[in-house]
Image (cartoon, protein in one colour):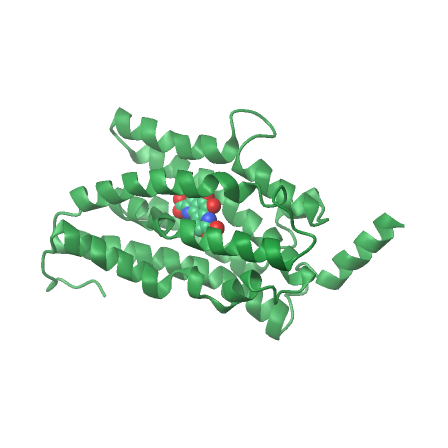
Length: 256
Ligand SMILES: O=C(O)c1cc(C(=O)O)c2c(n1)C(=O)C(=O)c1cc(C(=O)O)[nH]c1-2
């Protein structure tokens, strides 16, 4: 939608446009998200979701490291580095990635399978790589704007956690501990990123680029759920990808 004829928006109008992107394109609207939160997912689908999303979790501190390296201002780096600490923790066993592994552990998935990504869908890997490339190749403004999906994540997390807790008896509050800290962190992070974008998108072209970056990120999150839905609900997974029936058999064998 970027075009040289676009008009300069006021900061208020730019914010409204960004929020409109989320209202119409964020993954809270995706059929697989609705399925997950309403209890319609089979256990295999929940496992496939957690296993694939691990790759997204693992890429977040990498993409934030790329962004950090491009910041010339020390106060901005101090702010941004907290994101990396949130995911990697200060030491082994702490941080968001460790908490995501608690989720995949509780679902009975093998850590080696999860962390290697070898059972993830090809589209998950393409999507995650596209996000990493985006923050490396585009302007700092676009890289920061692409994180603005976090404006919308608190509401989808709240709905997802409540839905999963009431619909899947094998999911507990501890299983979903990853999500406990996220809404507060996401609010802090997106407040900062939004203020940056509103201040630094000074021309119509920059404003359109920021909107486009948020659209790109929404499309990347949407693509990951499209891939899960296609593989595990309507069609069948890529031959080398996670096979739900195999995992159920492995769990039964381990329990005997
Ligand atoms: O559960 C979700 O739906 C969800 C969405 C998003 C997002 O919108 O990008 C993030 C997260 N979770 C999340 O946990 C997270 O750490 C995160 C970091 C970022 C980012 O782009 O920097 N998005 C998200």
